[in-house]
Length: 126
Image 1 (tube, one colour):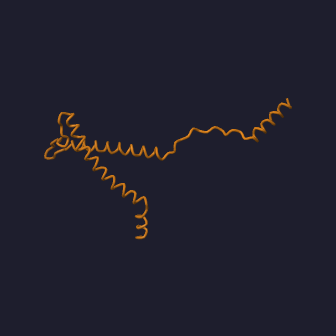
Image 2: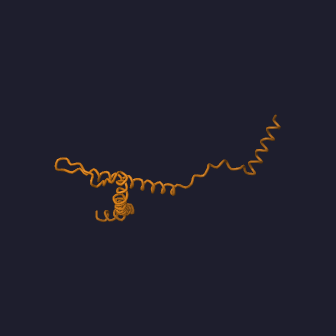
Image 3: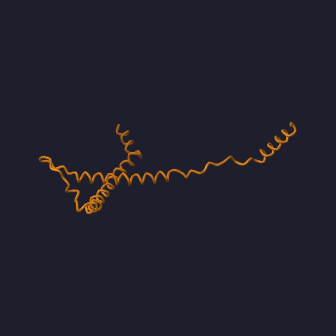
């Protein structure tokens, strides 16, 4: 069982997945910083100085921080858009450019000769 587990771990797919998770986490941190530190303050200024991190609703003793939820939604939309653009470009690079369908090849010399003989035989029968 240990050998089988070792073979599983060494497979390229598992290593690729591990790298993707690590890079995805780092990318998520960059996007979070972009949203929290750059975009949300600008959006707050446009909306009259609103700081989204302070937007809360008090329900009994609990504070519902819907401003953080708004930021999480914006993070998700930015990450989804960037991933969409990356996948779109990768798909374009992966597909070879589709050439226009080629017409039938020109007839060879033998085919031309056979066509002439056929035409002559038709003419003699008529």
